[in-house]
Length: 108
Length: 145
Image 1 (cartoon, rainbow over the protein chains, first blue to last red):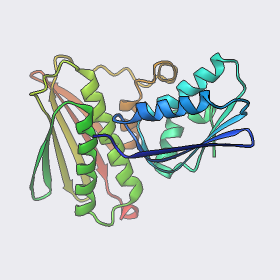
Image 2 (cartoon, rainbow over the protein chains, first blue to last red):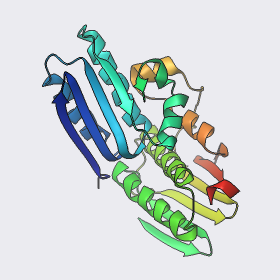
Image 3 (cartoon, each protein chain N blue to C red):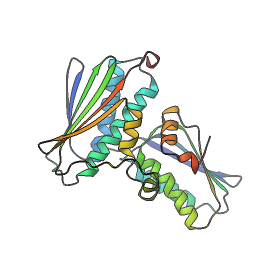
Image 4 (tube, each protein chain N blue to C red):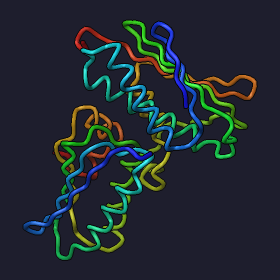
């Protein structure tokens, strides 16, 4: 069994928008990873990757690791792409702060 | 996986496999909601998050746990406390050296215990006769209802 997760990607105005709903946990974080990296690889000339996690109830630490892995990959490719995380619920926002992700991500 | 209930103590036995962690999370969530219908959503999300982190950590810590072994989970609901106890046979004790942000950024591991200890009201670990035991406690506050 895998936990329910929905990922929608679309590009507009040089921004790759990734809209996530459901929960990211140990059973499905690899699906999340694959979808994010496939969308990133298929997106040329973008300046920003924006995650809308307003419909996301929970993200496990494995899931948060994917955000860092994405930043690592962007840096290794010498790309200048900002990564933002929007609409996190208050429980997820607390974890983002505890992990000090606000140092590297634009959290809105 | 099976579950039994007696008053507000629920015992769950789960096989050490990640797919059962997903099932267990649902059982814990529904049980807590049924016994506390007005529970604050943030508190409920925190309980689910900590359950999932700990269960995943236990499963990953000892990959040699036999599939016929089980992880025993006790959910104790007695206002104002919601407690979770995890018990698992494991060849090795748990070693936790604290959260190292740089390590997490490199390997994406090592944040689970830190997050649980920050989010829950109490988080304790002890080992006895080859069995690792973890206790997590949350307090329901007036504002959580």
